[in-house]
Structures are given as C-alpha cells and as structure tokens.
Image (cartoon, rainbow, N blue to C red; front, side, top):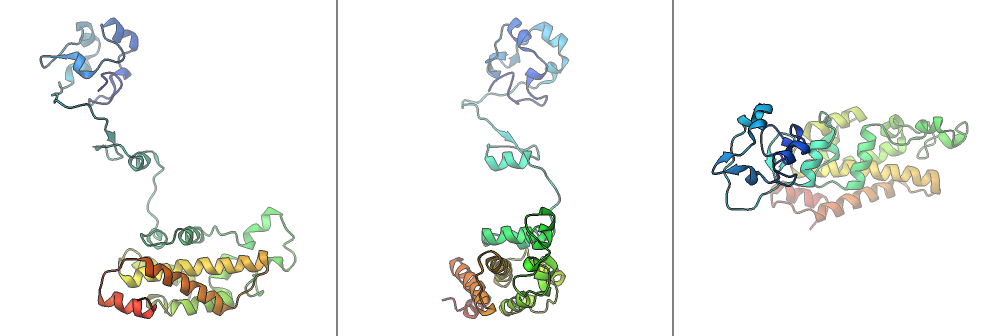
Length: 271
C-alpha cells in the first residue's frame, strides 16, 4: 500500500499534510510503501517530521501479514469493502427520501418499459396535450388538443385517469383480474390502495402491480397511436393487449407452489 496517497490511517492520505518536497528531503519517494517507513515494528519518521507534524505520533503502527496489499472502498456508511460500481455510485449519487410510491413502480418482476411510464405518470410528467400548449409546436385552438380516445375533453393526466370514458372502461375491465383494485373509484384511490400493499410479495399484489403498469402503458400507447398514426382499436382489443401482456409476464415468473398461486394461475389460464 502506498504510504502517502492511500487511505490506511485515520487521518487520511499523508500527502494531505506532507508535501512531495518534504517526502524527498526525508529520504523517501512518492512511490514508497507503508512497509518502507516501518522497521522492527517502529516508525522511521525523520525526527524533524515528528516535531513538525505531531499527528504522526498518533498513528498506530500496522501489523503486516504475508499477503499482498488489497485496495478497499469505503462505502457511504464508512465501511471498508471490495470496490464495485454499485458501491461507488451509492457514495456519489444525490440522496433523497424514498417516495411513497416507489414500490408501485420498481419491483423485481416489473416490465422496465411499463415501470418507466408509470414513473413519469406518478410525477405527472407524461406529455399530455395540455402540457404541450407552451411548446408552440402546433395549433392547439382546433380539435387536435382533444383527447384522441373519447374526443370529449382536452387530453390531460386528470382526464386520462379517469374521466375519459374509453380509458375508464378499459380500466374497469382490467381490474376485474385484481380484487384489490375493484373498489377504487378515482386515481387517488388507486394510488392509495397500491401504496398500502406495494411492498408485499404475494402473488395477488405482484399481479396487481403488473396489471396496473400494463394498463397505463397500453392505454397511453393507444392514445398516441390514434393521435399520431391514426390507428384505432376498440376497447376490447385494448383490454386484450393488456391481458395478453400480463399473462405472458406471469408465465415467465417462477412462482412458489401454493394455493394462492394456483388460484391466480387458474384465473389467468396459466398452466
């Protein structure tokens, strides 16, 4: 281990207090190892160093073992461990409190593209047409700003979840396959219900989160297909796309063999 630049003592790298010139004047070089400044279990600091840098007298002499030096990484909690990209990222990243709906969006079985869209939705960051008004990229005085699913109101988060009759009908069909969502009457109810159970690992909760993500994704996809590509599907076809997507995902997951899992598989016609 390098004597001057590695962190091997409580006071940090010695190069912070001892300059390169002083190191050379003391008979050492910048590549000196910790072993080079210990003889017979005692430090061999120059006397003038001890007088000039009193901190050196407080450094405990390390006990050397017969193995090669190892580089360790100090994590966010100050614990030394083997270096990894994830541990480095956890140290340097910006930290904030965990938001309440985290487990609704990100969970082990989630579909990444669905999770990303739900993440945008939770922050009301979907590019609905009411948010595009300030962009001046199109004339929003005509019918182009009207919801492409029902043509009744301006497209917005509040309309899509759940004032839009078309989207609402699709949601109701989807929620028949998730008992915990059937009693929800508003977006606020859905988020509250999902947050209350989102960290549970039961098959019922996992399927509900998959169904929620797939519904958001397919409804948003249908809206954009109608708006930009003039492709139109009936609500039955939209629901079928949601059902098929979730069913395929259920088939790909390794479930425990339990009564609840067998009942869920039967409900989704999964062998």
